[in-house]
Image (cartoon, rainbow, N blue to C red; front, side):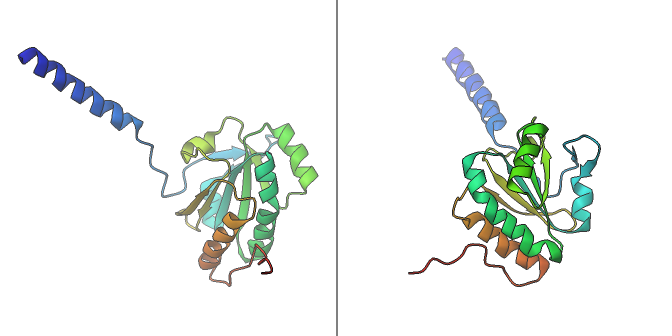
Length: 179
């Protein structure tokens, strides 16, 4: 009986330790200290410094068909709020050369960077592609919107949050469909 209890207790302790390790890490509430390089490697971008200048929308993305279909909505989002202080940064998982070709072809109107090692994905514990992270001036993470909506719903959700941050009217990103 004593042996059974010892084995059972050992199993319970080990199980609890394994479960604790399986818990996802908490998403940062403040901007992490991370520096990304420009695709040509000549310039660095400090996310903490960028957020000290104003709100930043970080879009962890790729050049897949879903992200591609959603791109127009995020271009419209950037266009609507850029003059009011929003900076949008698209961070791609592909290598810089592939991203540059894509960025030119799609005429990206916002900053884009390459993170083929996925360091920013790890920092934000992001499993979804894309993941959009809205950070206010000062570095507080306001909203994380994971996943792709090819109809622009995620961009519209972010538009409402950005308008609140910038104390301005919300811009309609997704056109209402006629009934």
